[in-house]
Image 1 (cartoon, rainbow, N blue to C red):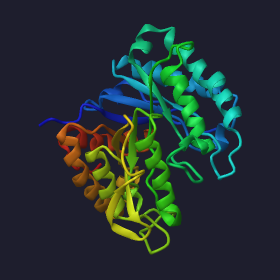
Image 2: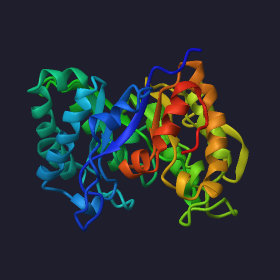
Image 3: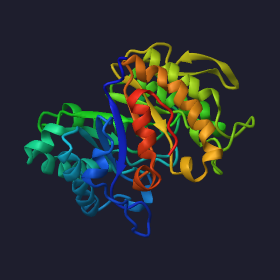
Image 4: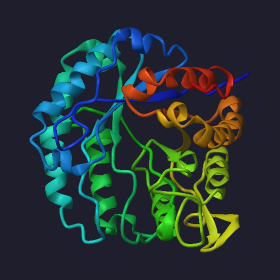
Length: 337
């Protein structure tokens, strides 16, 4: 069995709402119980309103406290970047956001990482927190979309800027489209993944697990989660090229976004669950089991990197999704908490 050598899991640090409530920190014993996980992503909230444009001093402190514990496991880790306000197609803050994130977050994190030889050796790179890109994207000029332009600027800073000397990876886990804008969402992600080298790895969220969620629901012709997206995500990772549906409303065939893949970006998968897998097991477990069975194949073929989203401490520890993570990452088993 040639199981995937990249089996990551999200952890979260910092505030998770505008009231100032913080994610519970994972202990070393919590992390040691994830014995089949090969590395961690210390993520931050995706809610822009929690930190907005900073200051990020408190967030950096929380992230580095979790990094200190992660480093004790000897496993590699990535660090999430604060969310940017990508809420519309009229994004005009490319330059301002780039300067702010670079100077007030990335450089500050790197200063602490690079000063500690253990951290520096284990640190793999940064994770982009926003999960989609708005607006239209030209396949021949992707960075003409200002949001993609920002990603490209940050990628240079993280991956190539010799003056800073970071020279690490940049990874992302966007969700494939649902609701009425599904086709545009998939197209934007596909152009980034297939036609740019912004990210080293793109871990696809199929969103399939969340079909029963009150804010999502099954596809009804105009809104909800499209069940075929799960198969499309698995095919994209298996073939290492991102597909979209062949046309709007045609969910039975796929086409490669941009016509062909010219990038070096690795297409990977995000296995998803939350504490609802325990608290509302009868509702959510059928979706988890289906996703587990389909994602088991690329997991065991050894070539597809994986990341597991299981919520925060409340999901992984309190709701025992640790058992689900361990079962899947051991041999693709579908274990309920």
